Amino acid sequence: MTPLTALLGIELPIIQAPMAGAQGSALAVAVSNAGGLGSLPCAMLGVDAMRGELQRIQAQSQPFNVNFFCHRPPTPDAGREAVWRRTLSPYYQEFGLDLGTVPAGAGSAAFGHEAADVLDAIRPGVVSFHFGLPSPELIARVRSWGAKILSSATTVEEALWLESQGVDAIIAQGLEAGGHRGIFLSEDLTTQMGTFALLPQVVKAVNTPVIAAGSIADATGVAAALALGAAGVQIGTAYLLCPEATTSTVHRAALKGETARHTALTNLFTGRPARGIVNRLMRELGPMSAAPPEFPLATAAIAPLRVAAESRGSGDFSPLWSGQNASGCREVPAALLTRELAARL
Image (cartoon, rainbow, N blue to C red; front, side):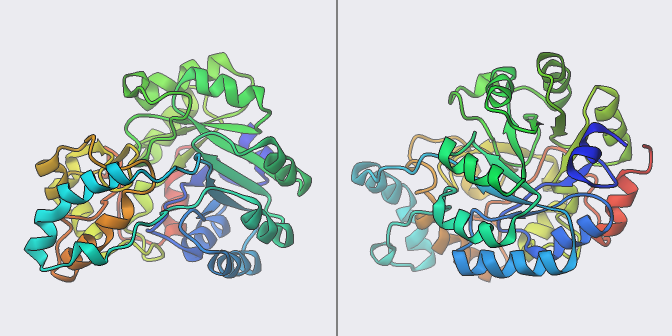
């Protein structure tokens, strides 16, 4: 028993990280039923899809976490979009695709009242956010359901800000973590530090329970995080090869190969820094570039290239999200993995 298990009503202090595009309800159900906290990422789900997934989880497991992005919606910039499309034009020609037919898209949605309306009927026990917090009005709606609120901090300053807003637990996201950086008080990536450097500093600075996240891949890593003061851990990459995950074939192949040892932060796929396995697009354009439009507008022009490449068995244009330590990825049921992660507690 830790402060986190008591707070969230779970048996094991293990949260399955929400991984948009690589999972649905099945993974969340498996982890929750094994004693951890399963999570459903909702940033890429429409209202009807979200409702259906939540109903499936609610019918099979309790408690569970519902996760949302809460970025500021971008203002489309025709000039930046034109630069991005010119940058990608040679690749469109290579695949015989017509760039002119690709509409600009909004990409991942930020948490808003439409999503909150869906949650009114579900009343999840835990709601987590990435990129800070939504408006006070939306936070008040979440609290009205009795839900516990979690959010990610990538610096001590962000952790202190989240505590000042009354969150119930803080996810200390180390630089090693796969997927999007949760950074929100600045855009300065030099402020980002590794999990086991960030964790004890956040634990010392706040009175709120702290959850460690970032390339914790096995039971030894879980025990180490708790020894440094974490009340629990959030783990994503290790679950990507589980049969309950919807990880694509090319993504699974990359995770199982030597390429998984080389990851980098990149803004090419969405417009915001996120860690993934280095592939052709990242090598040729450079992982961080001034060309992509603001998050999440970069996604629309990348999508046709991803589809075309994946149809040929290639992940050259896919966001192969992964933490720096993919050694814990195994093709085993998520329930078994969850229990093994807690073996040294």
